[in-house]
Amino acid sequence: MEERAVSTLNLPGSAPPMDFSVWGLFMHADIVVKAVIIVLLLASVWSWAVILQKSFRLKRLKEKAVYFEDRFWAGGALDDLYNKIQGRPNDPMTAVFCAAVKELRNAAEKSLLATAPARASLLARIERVVNVTIGRELANVQRNLTFLASVGSTAPFVGLFGTVWGIMNSFTSIAHARNTSLAIVAPGIAEALFATAIGLLAAIPAVLAYNKFNSEINKYAERLEFFGNDLIATISRNLESS
Image (cartoon, rainbow, N blue to C red; front, side, top):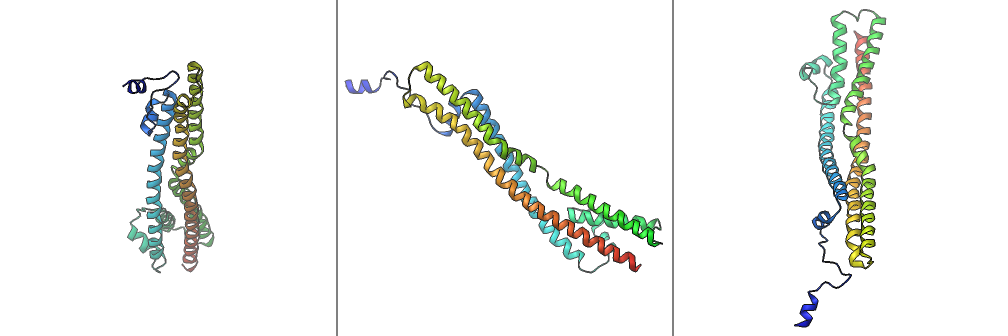
């Protein structure tokens, strides 16, 4: 009976049991550490939303590029393909094609194809239009990549800030309690390190996704440039034979 009564007492220097689960660490953390964790969790959720959206979009762009290239190299007239698209592109490669053919049609309507200098000037304009369209479409494809890069580079440091702040509070509590037992030190250290863990949880997927998407977009950009060059060469041959 006496042993049971003693076991229920909190001995001097002891600490009440603490919940070391994820939720328990969050609820027991300082307000600054909580704010850091919430910011990192929101950044992680937004990063995953960007990752999923970008993955699906790049996959669709590749499929549409293959489909359009097959139609382009099928050997039909450029005007026929333009009429089938109806001037409403739904992917970057189609947008490049429509911009070039539209410029060609405008010149033909204004009778600017009569002389060789006029045709050369038109070809230079078409080349500029193609390059501008490629740049604009790639800028749209690259949207939100900067966010992934920012999360990947800053999230560990934000988490480290929460860790440093938590450890400072832990040492302050130790000084006030005048006790350095593990039961006193462990909860504060665990809360502090939890912030760093969340920072890494947000940063690692963002960095991996950024590197993967950046590589895929660079390959897609090369594909667009090759297509643009082929399109300009095709238009040049058509102008020479006209």
